[in-house]
Amino acid sequence: MKWYAVHTRSRHEKQVDLFLSERGVETFLPLVHTLSRRRDRKKYVDIPLFPGYLFVCAEKERLYDVKFTRGVTRIIGTDIDAPTPIPDKQIQDIKSIMETEVQLDPFPYLKKGRQVRVKSGPLKGLEGILVERKGHYKLVIRIDLLQKGAAAEVYISDIEPI
Image 1 (cartoon, rainbow, N blue to C red):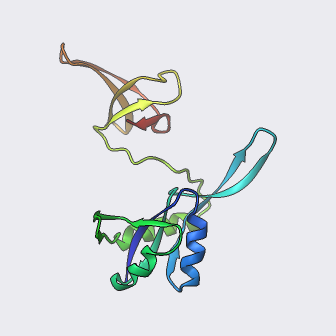
Image 2 (cartoon, rainbow, N blue to C red; image 1 turned 45 degrees about the vertical axis):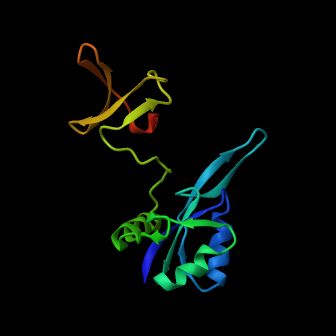
């Protein structure tokens, strides 16, 4: 039995989790307790750490049942017909973090060298390349014609991938 990532319809993660559990499939849906702000009120809600996804532990033959569960759009894989298992270590790491009292926030997967845009802060709207130097993240703005650049320190939470 291996872990697989299942993509669900938008905002159907909890329903799909319930449907799969009723079918006897082992699931893992990491939820984050967060404050939801509406116009007229604030309340705490549990939202998925990875919106649109949950994890199932199943044998490859059993994935057919998973795929045709109401609310499931697809099982993630390198090919459309070949689901790719997720390493057990990665699932165990997420489970370990979920058992602690550490505050977690969903965050886009960013790699050094990736083109990013600053979404908040004094540099809002700037685009550049994300680099890491001496443990700090920097946004590099390039002037291609001159083959020169300038780097400004940014908080990783203030940027988004382009």
